[in-house]
Image (cartoon, rainbow, N blue to C red; front, side, top):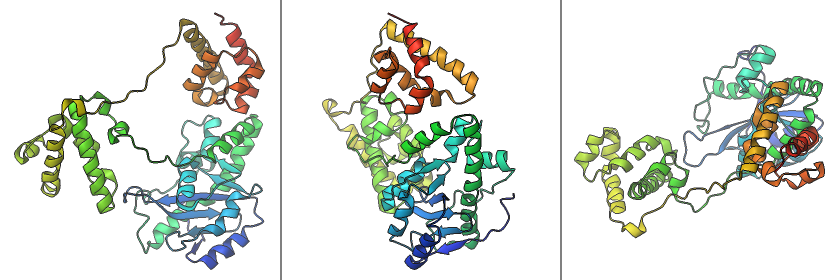
Amino acid sequence: MNATTDIAYKMINTSDELENFVRTIGNEKAVGVDLEADSMYHFKEKVCLIQMAATNVNVVIDPLAVRDLSALKPIFKRDDICKIFHGSDYDVRSLYRDFHITIHNLFDTELASRFLGFPETGLEAVLKKMFGVTLDKKFQRKDWSRRPLPPDMIAYAAKDARYLLPLAKNLKAELDEKNRLGWVYEECEYLSRVRAIAANDQPLYMSFKGAGKLDPRSLAVLEALLGFRREVARRKDKPLFRIFGNHSLLELADKKPLDLKRLESTGTLSSRQTSMYGREILTAIKGAMKLQAEDLPVYLRKKVPRVSLAVAGRIKALRNWRDKQVRKLAIDPALICNKALMSTIAVQRPLKISELAAIEEMKNWQRKEFGRDIVRVLKGNGE
């Protein structure tokens, strides 16, 4: 197969066309799904294209033209039609956020690749490994919200989804041979229920890398600058990084220039940025500098609970057991038992397989596959 070969696809721009497509795929057993969004070009990202491919049909749906996608909801909800994605986390969140589309019977080929121990699990790498396909990613970072879209961009978007059906078929066969298909099905069920993170009222600096190293005054300056950047980005409908980079804001929070000359001397902003926003930046910094000491922000650190020597010993024993499983199964250690789950198991110390059911973070397949081993390890690592 060659990813550069022209392919037949249909562009869907009307509700009637969408309804016809839904009728066409009503008897399909599986459909490949891919999305294109505009997160690199707008303040509030949105889905700009939905690509869907079945056995004899390949379509590109324009949700900016077809505003009502409710005709798709039954297809995504049907348990008898497998919806195949590659790296579905973002797509599942986006489809629910923008269209309230929920997904039943999802299969994620990226996750499947991880459970098979593939060293690289991006779609390009997996298709190269499985089919010798080389994908052309020249449009990957383009603005998918622009209209009209050039025909070559639409054709590019239509290509990836058509590989998902044969890819899923091959991966399922390999997983079944290794008795891991049920593991992936259960993980996919969890993936199908992920949702976009709701907005919270935490300070902006709490999700800013490097903020934890700043003193309270610098933190106040950073928060003022982050608020200013967010407002500019919202007003101009641009992503945050296209207004100011994080490194620039961190530098300004550290150096705290109070006049244009000092702002320019920091070298953190381009002359254009200084010309456009310099005075407002200085106003934000000065406002933060006037705060009284008792009003300065404090970085809220998550308290890491201390563990007893006994718990630490159990964690070490579980890690040693997991490392043996990694060598045996040749897959990512976190898939077998991640750090958080090991800690929970070590603290609760279940000594019967039935007691593992009380550990909510543990999946059914993990209990079934590794429950006896885990109990044995814990019994062998007593108080």
